[in-house]
Image (cartoon, one colour):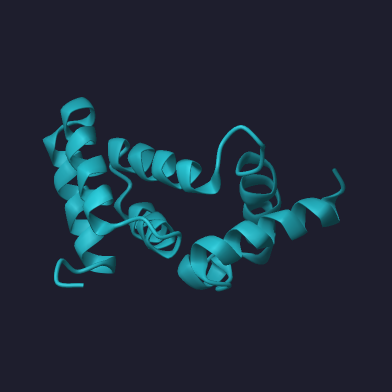
Length: 121
């Protein structure tokens, strides 16, 4: 796949996850790193016929909770919300992860979720 094709496919995924907001707006990063993110992460890794974008989103959220990466959770919880996942589904994902990744990771997950998706929404 050409670099242009990867970039186009990556931009399509970014548009679905982040409502057409550039990745750099959510996370400040140099242009070159942003291009790697769009071209490789979203243009390669998030592609494929064997898994839907909604499944990739949930897996990413679960891994970020397990690794206790609060800032990245905020970004990907926003993406999951934009894809139509319910807040209850993300809560259940965090509860499930707590039993494998630990309670502190889950607490961080709930804090990140509340930041981007308050319970009253």
